[in-house]
Image (cartoon, rainbow over all chains, first blue to last red; front, top):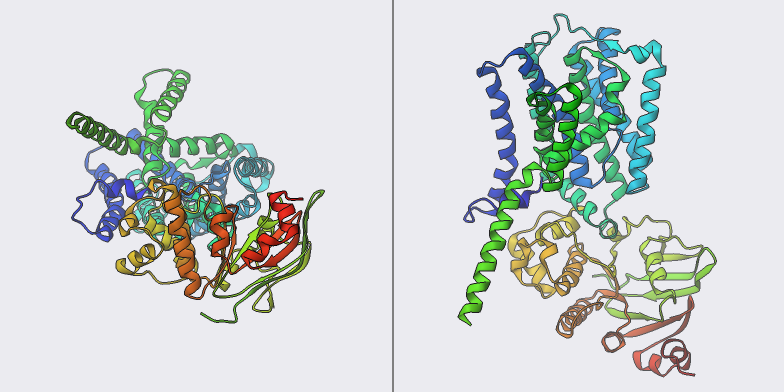
Length: 346
Length: 240
């Protein structure tokens, strides 16, 4: 959500407010266009399933990307929070027979509450301690999911069958219609996150990320703001958890373990944590890349790891930083040329 | 700007482990004046700043704002009273533009957005050119960062400003810019409390100077009185 990077690429005659507006709307327009095109290009079931998975993972990763990009804090409990959303939605849908809409709302609320609790426990420490604390909480959540067999199904997990359920006129059991529902959830999530980024609160978060002492001294309650960021990330993870359980229709605790959280961190790093679309792009690469590598599953995983390492080493700010890198390189080159011409002239 | 606004520290003591950082220190500052705090390293000046601004809770004593006890008021609430501090280190949000830096300060106090020309006036008031508004803070010089730090604190309209080494790392020209700005703020009615090691810059600026040594206040008076004080000379300049 590094607005200045994108703004720099727009014509200079536009006012800074107009450029800000364009930069705010442009990524959302790109996503809507990209997601909306899928039903018209005749993809097969496997690709459609992968696209749905990528969208759900991208939704969850966007919550983490917002938290990390705006406040500078990351968490190893993000997948656990998503799991809380998934189990909540699955439980209320299957056992309490509530509709999908209410299940989605309850999953969002549960994710926000748990993530807010984790943040309020962890936010008083910073840096590595924060991450380690979230790691510990993630272990506890996974243990509860494994041991609380009566509710979660333990290691055997839980099955969720959507039946004839519809939401917004879209049937959950229909793969294409469910894909569209996931696309709507992702789009709404991105609009919400982008609005927060461009709101006054976004400026507060980025400032506190840059210089906590200064933020305190100017009157910002850094702790409270960081807890609220955790809540926002949790709301998004909860929503993604709900979509996840209705997509895969079976869940077990291992899917939301610390390992899964690390994959979310990878997705954010891969796409670029400073960009709204970074986590979505990271999730797309993470989901589709193994499919394009025609190796055995184990070799694919190794190749995926190697490719991710290479991308992160070459582009530490993520794939979306490539444009800015090229622009910076060109500017440095032209500045060097101008300096050389100046010296020759002298 | 109200004439009554004043910050007072009453019998403040603070220790860190086995180190007694402040012992029974009383101190006060009011509007339209510049008070300098001097003393060797470790004499307790910065600890006093931290206590006044709420970054450190004292073991004993009270901090009063206009006669009201604010010792337990959290650090982020004190700027809302009109009590703002700066730091020795970088006083800017590096990845934000100057405009966003100033917006940050205003947002915390729920002040409305202001026009471009008003923003330009704010930066020009402290001696920065208006074109820095759209520059990221990381691209500003050290001297400009110092001035931006002052502009940030002014954006929230403080009544008492605590400045921690405002001349650190500045060349002569940049230091003169800061001096000019501080005098103008005092003349406009603001109360300034300045911790500084650069005696030749600080002393001509101050209406009153308070000297510290080993966590105690050893003297208080005008710059010339302080320079003549034998306790100060012994503690600060090593005279015997």
